[in-house]
Length: 193
Image (cartoon, rainbow, N blue to C red; front, side, top):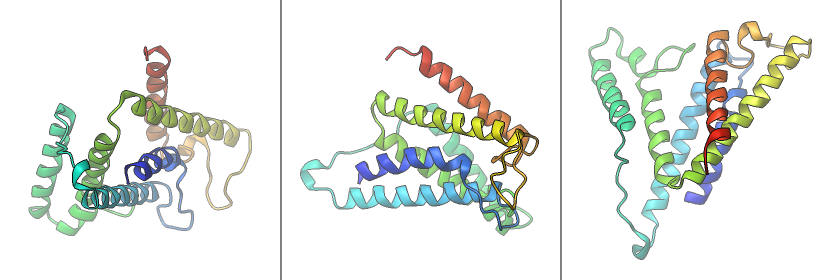
């Protein structure tokens, strides 16, 4: 199952900025949240199935990575979960709104995605591949942004240009995404493998 997960994660990392549900009310942002949730649940189920059907000789005890980022993110999700029960609208706290989709369910899915990814990708070379896929996705995203500014239409339903954040939904979010792409690409260029 790990081999399937190792294929699903890079594909999902590459496709994430390009996922759109054009006929939905909030087609750009909410579709990406649904895509992340779906991918996290798929790889989570695949990982559990892989653990259940592993032969006894191959069973190894895997522990949650000892990392300050996981600790902080886990505490955040735990506190977020507790605060959902005392919120004004618990259903809104759990699921969020249709324009954002960032409730506690989304945060649990991000936690699952990051934990399964850290369990499956143990070598630094695997992480370099994921970051390379992320950078390639950012390059394609940037080319699409430039082409949309020259008049190329990618959709009949959506106005995709850099003022609207092209496929991210907001120019500020697109800038943050491209800043991540830029700095990760610099890290890949100047890292010693």
